[in-house]
Length: 131
Image (cartoon, rainbow, N blue to C red; front, side):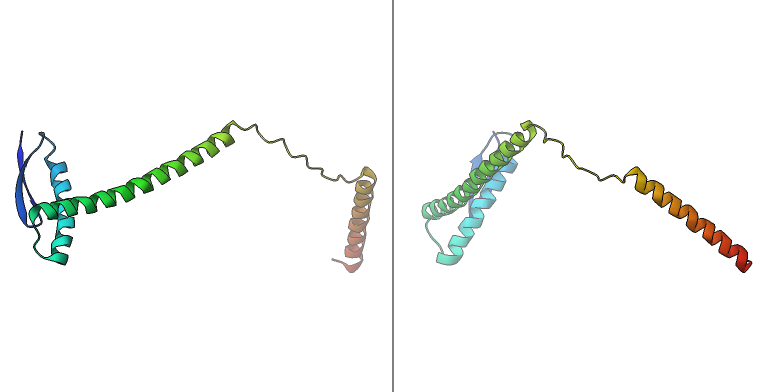
């Protein structure tokens, strides 16, 4: 079992850990050291046990806040997943019926006749003007 030397609040400790866990121990020690540094900068030198206790409590408080946020986010995610599942399992909406007005055949025929007359007049005017 490897021994890892860590520093917390300016004090060095040797701690044993499982093989391969050294990085996690170093990371945890760094977090505890950061809290201890805050304490020692605010209060000066304090007894080791008190420093470790207070730094641990500060980390526990921060961890509790993160866990509360995580629970809130997990609950919100569960709500969204339930909404999504409800939308997926809901029947498809009825097709929307749209009525498109049609032009009566008489109107189409009249317009075609008017267009033909207009073209004939245009051709006649072109002939007379020499164009």
